[in-house]
Image (cartoon, rainbow, N blue to C red; front, side, top):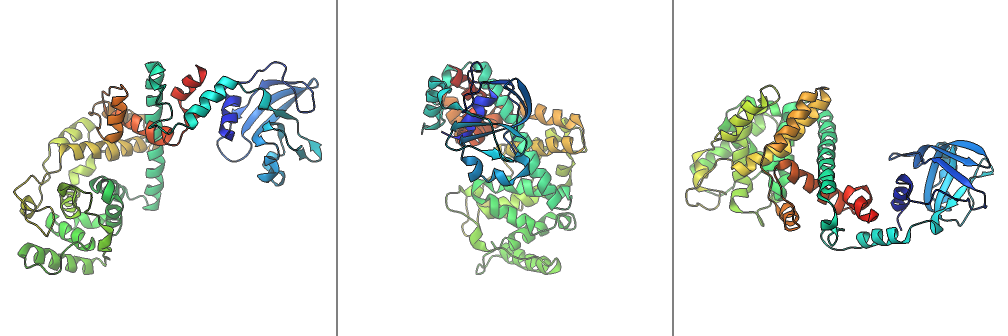
Length: 420
């Protein structure tokens, strides 16, 4: 059994509240179970209990074994001096504060057997999600409620990451946006090296030079330009890249950082970097926080970000291909809107204390088609229908942050299953 299960029982009052007794036989009445504390310190604050006719108000601490109090070194932490009740599964050792024994409830004989059995089945289930076998027995209203909860959690989680990065970049908003876009353009395989590349080049450079020069700088710093190829375009890139690398005192990456294996040709790093150069040298792209969002979105989704003609017959420097499109695909644009524009808008609304941007972010999610990656396909097989990116983003968060971590006790779907 995990301690979080005891937290859940206590928080949901899923224990018999009548005839509760302490380990010393005295009767205890729980007037208030307290407020669950997710930070350091006692597990529940502002609890109220009555023992021997005396009302006690303070903190409540929960452990599997009462001896965990000493194992966690609470006896040396003043934050635990105001604990009025110790709630444990097993009472194996009395606990003292200032030489006074802390009143203790042992829950071992109070836990609902069927409830724990259902919890154990989910916790030990090795299928795609813990509640795979019983998921469809939950009313859709609870499933939708959890998806709505998950999307807000996802946006807030991303907001915290964006806020931290914004401070680390000394409040350079453009650099922040470029880093986020590069992460998407790198796809899952080259996300980290693409971020590293962008972090090596100050955003101010992108508006000092033209698109061709920026492409040369990016490819040179990425260290992806071949050394022994007799090709005018490549030689020109190498010459320009070296010049600007020296001019701006830039440092090249380790070429081994880039991955080609497991990547389809349109995702090859040199081709993606050329597309990235075309995107970030268009200053209108950075105006989404200063323009009517519907107008900006319409422009972005229909704009053709052109690359050098060389890339119409290349995905890489080594092999020439048949002529192909070089523009950023509609799918990639959607991913940029979903994973860059919307989270930044949501964060910007919080940062500026402006509800308008928060509402705009949610509205945008509701008006973009849902993603269709492997996780979403599996949700669909379970009978879920998706209307917008708000649904797909919520389901991604549900899978990655709840199901995969087996946080069933924090999930409204899991909560309903435990009530069955």
